Length: 388
Image: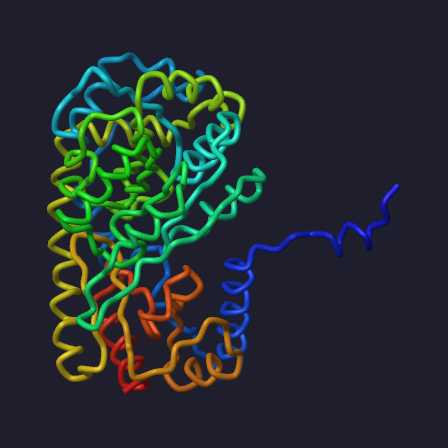
């Protein structure tokens, strides 16, 4: 029998999470030293102002049955077709969808599909949500990373040639580019279509995309496309949500069976989120959301005029990534450096390298546009002033 010490020494840690833990430890130390909570400008939860505005508009049916099991395969085709139609702006007979409670569960089920169907050479386009790479490697799949880089004009370069030359079976793409609000151009979408034409399976994680900017609507009907979308995430509704995997009917049939093995039944919160997405109220909430984040973006534009070494590009998303190229790029967490930043600004952030942004992005960090306007103005202003 293996000893406890052997088990403890063999635990494989997830680098992304270990870095976040270190950031939280620094925040706690600064809090104890200054007796003032450190504000995380990258934190995924919304601010009180946004929540109040959203709740004043949001409506849903709370009288649903809380006792019975609910499975994706029990939703009738009419409901699934409505979801596809609202998502794709059309309703092709070729596609079907599987319903899950979150993007993370969708990732696990798709990775299982890749494993069981012998996909050998997989590419994850970075930056991307950390659990994609972690899940793929956990299943023992051969995974390589390719990177979105910036040119001298801060335009995003899709690494088509590198992807094309390496004969990948699968390419996993996040849209908009992770935590940036940057959507792919028409020319880049054409390159993605070329990958599909080469019989490469392309998986699109569009879980946080704006409904009017989904890539699926710009792609030809293809058995080589799988897309993940989570409509509530765009509204920053993170505890009552659902994810949908849209794919060919053949793949969908496979997923419906294995979702039962890996995930089980859907919670009531998922059922309510599906109902809300199909209601007119969802678009009312979109209107409130878009007005709110635009207000924060306008404020950030004014800050950047004062601190012009900082830039960002992005739209129609909860997050943007601000780049400061006057700072030296780093690819690991310097405890003392971050301690000094937090002591002087009382502000924390998730640096881009943790999410695999390449060095061309420079020192960059995520800003959550659904935070309170005055909180962003104050704390982002202090950060930009620190960086110069």
